[in-house]
Length: 528
Image 1 (cartoon, rainbow, N blue to C red):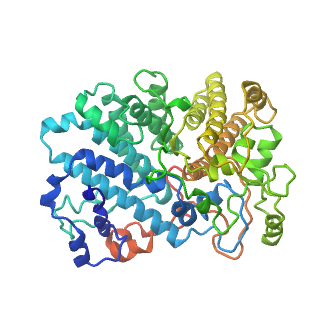
Image 2: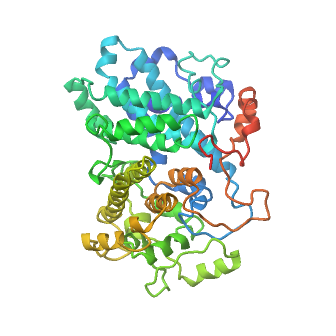
Image 3: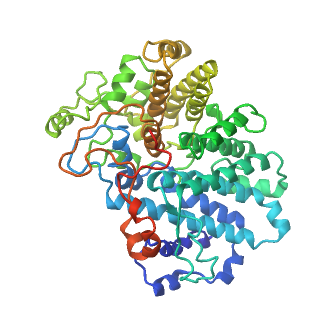
């Protein structure tokens, strides 16, 4: 099993390590020994190699997300500080290294798969499809952070039989990466409807697959829901606009062939069963609070929830220790001194300990029903089908409410006290509240804002990268930030820059994209 995790050495070809060639050669396995592993084990290795970024762990939240996406989306409240909109070098390099370790593991699985007999390839095709869906999900996030990335030629050191010279990868344009992923996912969506899987493979996959446990119906829904997410992301790009319209029409008009995650029962997630395994969220709280206060609520989110009696308020947050039961959020436009006094005063709400931040059994949230319904609502609205848009919007809200209430029973932490259950009457009253009611938004832009606010609330701290991408794409909800006049980056950036290691170790290929390597450069889908 140790072969599952030894392919990180291939990341040197991407410039994410300062190892020497000798050190790499010592760590790099003889390609002739690849036959000692199996595609099943490699599949498990692919899933496991990105575990830290899917589950809610200290390092990802403290180092990578705490001062970047969590602030750019105002999913949390924080105390303003100089240079707060510049993503830190550690955040960038760690996220980059994590992805390319994952990519190398995936490419090694493909290498193993390609060396199998044609019969074995056919029998075990499901492993390649499932791993690729998962790989594309996380590749989309990296593209949405950086734009051009080394991709088609990355992670091929084993495939290239250890030839360093041919293993330094060029950068692929983000449009090309999206096109390839969308093409493949469309093909997988059709193939999964007819694929034949031997019973023995099905049995083994139930053990190796800790996302969907070998449930092919869920892999179909994952595939198509990911297509909806990615098509929506590129929908405003002139290159993809017609594709968005045609493929979304095909998906929404044929639920039998293209099923989606539309109810919480089908949410794509990594469930936590045993805290003694690496699949847990035991250190989420320490990563989220950072230096002691980064789990605070944001004023805009709390005010919106308060003003409309949002049932999620008590499930997602808890009042500050000195707030006398009132829910209050931190205003991001206040000066740091005033914010500091508020923090000391203990009146600012925080994310609910028992349901979220101290919930060791918090599942890794990959795609949920609320998100998919909100994306569908936007599509229907753009297509002129107001009734369908309203239905998806309201279904998404109810799914989001139920999702957050379902987190509390999973937890073994009781520090937040008993959570008062919600009910249909409370949900319906929320849908009818003035600031939420679909009919009260009398223009298309107003309805798009309604959808965006719900999507933003649902993403919260659980999906900050998706939230930041959607905020950049739609410019909704409209967030106000304190302007940082101490730094050239006065407001949140449009993208992340590349890690400095790329300039050092992959310079000829980096030079081809160096002109784009600015925080101000917009992604191709960011056209508003």
